[in-house]
Length: 588
Image (cartoon, rainbow, N blue to C red; front, side, top):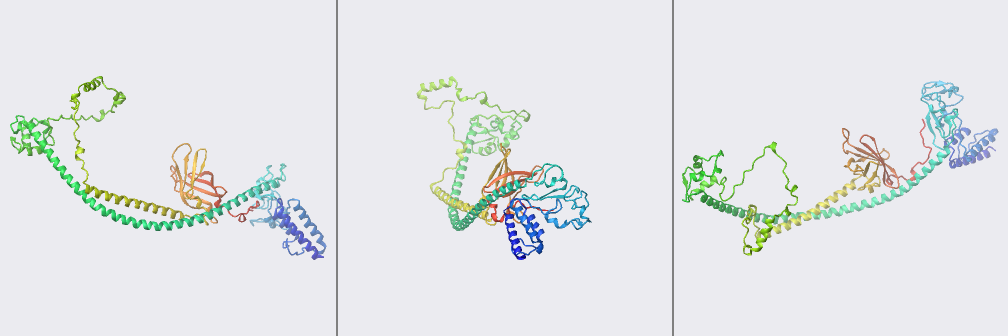
């Protein structure tokens, strides 16, 4: 008979487990532990039955078991009897028939002093259900929702803190048990999170496949580019030799041309100097007797050696080498002494510029302010002159008396003549060699840059399966009322005023800085623009699972330290690895 009843009890317990699993309101831990309390701490809930009852109490056990089953099936929260405010995990410390020892071990008191509204234990553990101890805590069972702890000072304060209303048992506050609704809403949120996580994880798998494929392609591309780079490098060296070979005869031809031109210029200058000397001799020889005397030279005050305003006979004789007069043959030595200061009488002397004292310097007056259109102010006399020129055709070939034919400028005379054909051919050949060399060298540099960029990208830590690879070379913006924040993963973070102003660097890529179990949940950007009398700006980017890749928020929790929230499917985990239970909590 006992075996049959044990089998029935075991089946009922198995039904109880199934009902508990399907229930949204019962607290699984409380029910199962309650069952073990009723039937024995070692009684199994499923499987082989160890009959906990004596023959005379089998019906009582079965009655209690069925009561639990029906309670769970009706959605009724099941509570295990224990002092008010005590969590189930601490029930073993509160046994009614034994003295109570404070949880900190400081003292032992009779059990009837537990929850007597007087604080006996320093840690407040003897008053879990009253507000007597300032450091006590009250456990809200909140069947159907999250169990939680509240400070014991909130017990019977007229405010409903526990969703199951157990904290206001004696305050008269009208509380409503909202645990069932809260649990339902939380499960809906968790279900949506699970769906997002599931979709995000599928996207993550695609990102991993794309990253794997892209990495292989890049590695193959680098290999090909390395081979092409070697070929270009050989070609660069060959063209460098061609260029240097072509430049050597070019250099020699240019030097010969330049030397010939320098000699030609020296001859031209010498001829000009002789012409000026002959002209000066004629100008100085006032009496045309074929000699330049001291008195004739003394008439040119600009030749005064000491610039005292007076050219004395002694000074003139010094210029003339002690002679009283010189002829054309001996005038050359005199010309050497005076040619730098001598002013020809046939050329008007330029007025010496008057230096304005510094305190009298004024802004120059712009003529076109008073005469904005000078080209339109043509006098009637000039128009009449044009008419006269039309009337006298015989004078068309003559220049007007007041207009001088422009002479060849000094720069034109000093300009080097074009190269001879042979030299020009050498120059053209060398230039072609230079162009060919520079073109290939440019291709070589560009390929070298591309290889370095790809190798740099491949060297980044893009996650265990390279799932963050797609973020590289991308930027994401968040616009607020004042600023536009820009996150460029693995590069930098910046901030720019929305209505004009310069961009501020909030940090450049530093490292992954998440917790030990998953460092890929946090990015750290450091060494940004320095704050005024403060540290350099830095940004922490927290990554959360999402179907979309977007910056969701930004803040500045500390001065010059910014925080960004960033969603990406790259951090989504497989749903089976995520605990979606709403009852996760920590108990004191």
